[in-house]
Image (cartoon, rainbow, N blue to C red):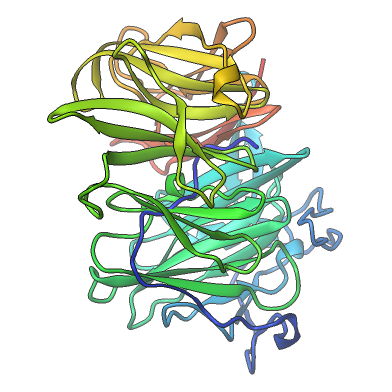
Length: 453
């Protein structure tokens, strides 16, 4: 699986699975009535229906108007709607970037325009496994957000929204793996403490999704999609400050705290947890570890999502490892040399190894020198990894994609006036997906995909 962002949460003491509505409750929920979004100017087309695996047959056209209906069973007292006719609705199309080869920019269609009229509040991730690409977008404002699951060409697979309510509920992330999907929502009333919850379901399947809840005695829920990767059986959430939990993809049950920092457990030697990635079966994460009375080191750890993480890639020369990513048959990470401050080193290098679940069988090698003295988000897929690059200056609009086997780097640069905005959307077999943040004289943000060369 490739993705730009990850799905774990640093969360709470009181963990509870919420009673779920079975498939017999119906897609509209009990007593729910559907509402049609105002999407003037859209024209209807007839994409084929979406199967349980979430693949739409739509190929062209603007699609139908969005029809929303309330869900009967939701978490943390939040009102939520689900898109009833997702397979017939198109969220975006593509058109060539001006003046940039092998580049297409996303063109928002009415359902996304309504969710985020300003076009600047998007977060997202792009995942790919078994030849299926999914674009997951969180769009909206600080008061109200929607989560959309779409094909690479913009046809929706599923979508949820949380209308403005007295509980100040806010959708914060979405994730998917195979046919499974999930969203995270928080009640921000009197938070902290507060309540965090979400829904799990099969993409496009009938029946209401299953809600789950956790309590956060202090801190906050996962901040953005980079803290929420979903594997083949476990859905992971990384709550702030640094408490990692996971739950079952299928029913939201079996909620477990699998790692936590000193902020939660004074006996823990973990100072920070970040950079979580999954290949479906297992998860990688960076751990900042206290060594002795005042020393600090960084390691790459691994977990199946049920057991506490165990050391996976550990330096033996005093260097600092962090920000790991699966890359098909490889695993890659950053190596920091001579750490002088938080994420500040004399030198940073990109390293990799052929992947093996057994850490004793790894054969690490250096891929390249990195151009910055700090580490940045790293994404991987199909033998490649990508990260912002900054030849001769800050990482404004360029991204480097390394072929791990050949160690060759290819640079992709956004149209002028835009700069890369990590975390990246994704890296798939055919494309690099990037968010271009607008400058003071450019709006809105730009979402692009580069055809890999």
